[in-house]
Length: 539
Image (cartoon, rainbow, N blue to C red; front, side, top):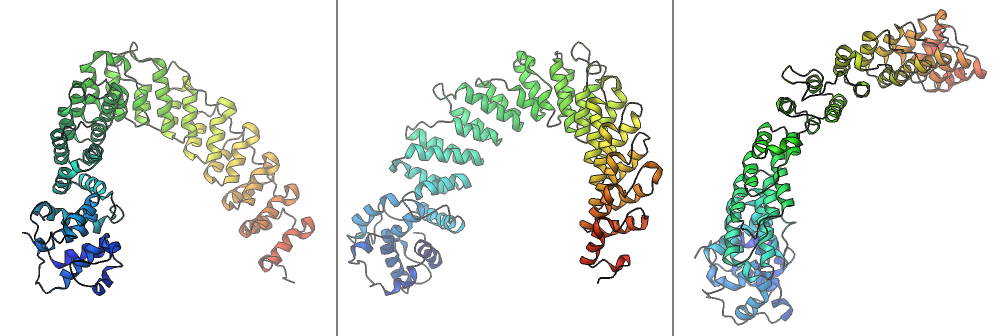
């Protein structure tokens, strides 16, 4: 009989009753303890275990001698709690288990179970607790973590449990999900021997989703005409197999009647699987569309679709192009806008003959300058860069999209009006501190730097954008820029918000009255300790 060291038994005892083991030494030594409450608890087993631990018996314990007493303590750990009381009654209380070599003897396999259960207790304390449900927890853990011997021993004991079918099914699901093929086969064999039929739908789906091809093959061989999953389930399995890109799983599922899943295959960019599906069912070609390939940027899939002898709908092509523009997929946009010579007009409607203004607007608002340039250069007759009262330039300038602003003004100077809506593009750029955009807008003669009663200068001062303030102050009076507008609002706002470098610029400019609003700015200088900086007394 195998022996285990004191340390292992101590670990089990300590884990089962961490607060009781310390005081066990005071318990009367002997095989029988008269207290009914104690002998019907796990403390009874631990007390007797402690007796053997304190005996001078060498490095190892005699596990045959411990027998049922030790097992009574271990069952709560490894899951046989449902039988604990019966073991106490038949063996322990009758003192017949000391040299028992029958049903309750510690076989080498069960010793291994104990060893693995201790490992489980030490590494997953939140998962396994001393309770009647420990059998389920321990079996599930073994299936999930690939502990074959532990799972095998517990599966052989599962027939004693009331929930045998549910237990094996849960274990099968976990083993299939985690890729433990040997445990899957063992559970299937155990169920077959016990004449238990297990549903394979969920284990099949989970193994398909995780690309466990060997397990999918094993589960499919277990199917018979009465166990075939529903058409919906098969289609879900094929769909997820296409998504994970397993051509082997796709072939296996097609062989048992799964429907062809075109859309997820296109979305995942698996050209080989798409061709496999089309070869299996040529009618599936009518379901091929570009749109599923756009968001994940499947350029090779798009090229393949464009090479197929199919007719793509104008709506699919336009929607695909618009989405590619919005997402910034330049290569996709180029292939769709300027298809290769092998793509004929009969199979692919030309985008250049379509109004692409909304696609252009999406590219501008999503800050994709490469696509903006592509459309401005190669599709200028298909877009209106002034749409919605010059919304592209207004939005790009307001959001700080410098490259887009430059492209719009450089490539369409005769069309774009950056002064639309009272120079809102310029005013927003000043307010938000987009210096490069302000500089580029000022190069356009239609832009009025004093628009909105000097709103650009006022907002730049209020928010402390000193670089923009410098540029505007240097423009001179002939441009209409006046820092004294609205009772020197620029000066008052800069002082109020603590932008003293901006205040200094305005003071040095000489066009602002420091005494405005009863000396509001001077009082702020004094209150904040900045008076001496501007030549005023703190008194």
